Image (cartoon, rainbow, N blue to C red; front, side, top):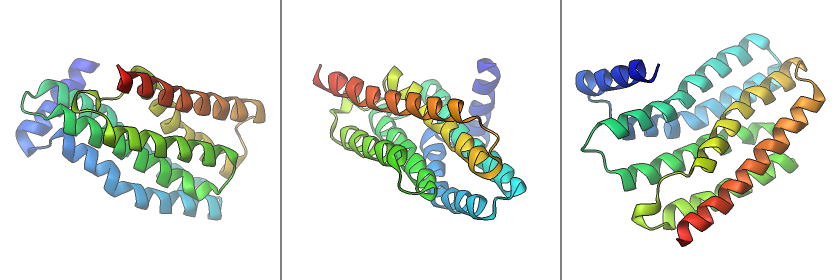
Length: 187
């Protein structure tokens, strides 16, 4: 599967000049529009709008995975700048898409942690701008949190025990990511 994705992103790079940074900027520019779609899905409680929103959201989130594959396979990519930009774009996307769910404990805790991680991404030394393994796991959990929240709000389909367990796990990994970046930054 990764070979196919590698071929695909290298084709995009060779044919259309797509770079890892272009894929990263896609997340930044899409964030407010996705937030508006999430807000519309929540207010209308329309399953169709929620499905369209989740499909677009997952397409935009997939650029995070694709930009990493592309960055590892083109030699001219600036990994220090690209690593910081990638981390910041993830934070922007997550924060924007969580805002429509309102101010509650879990959105507050995740947005606070993402703000701390953004500070770390900006001020980390050049060789420490890349995400850690914990940070990557945290991003996967956060990326899937938005569809879980949408399904829960729009349909009520997600069982309460799973819902709260998932939120707890996401928050735990988010703060573990701060811890891992702090010690990665200190080494």
